[in-house]
Image (cartoon, rainbow, N blue to C red; front, side, top):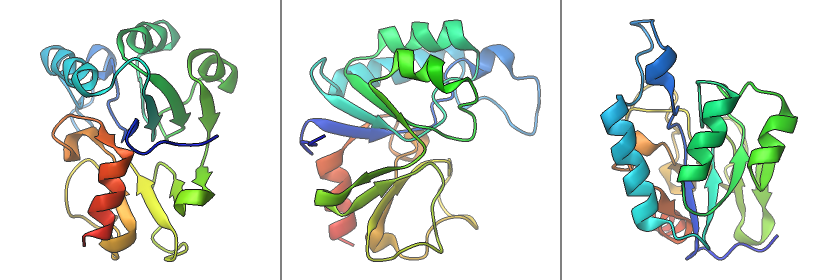
Length: 172
């Protein structure tokens, strides 16, 4: 598949629906119900119906019915790179998304997408990852020139164009 960086977006870690099912104080929901509505509006404000979104894990935490409902509300075609919270059977994800991967390599862009940063992996290939909700911390990559975190909370609540993510890596 060819990727047009100006019409392809990256994002991750919305954990849609987590506010409905979370009862643990040590892992609070990413968004309240109202904040989740704002995140959906932000998504649809930048992603057009003809765009592609490379979703880098942890899409929905509240079951298959909600997964389908949230997907229908979002613009664009979505390719899912599964995260640690994407635990439904692959057949479910395959029926909802345009593609499903555990890792996505885009050779012509010298890029790999996976949910968790591969700090000990290759440093000569660019990485887009999710999983890390806050800036800093033990798991943040040591070489920011080749890494970009797609986590929605690290990007103002918006999906980021692939073009912009690559430019941010190049400008460091």
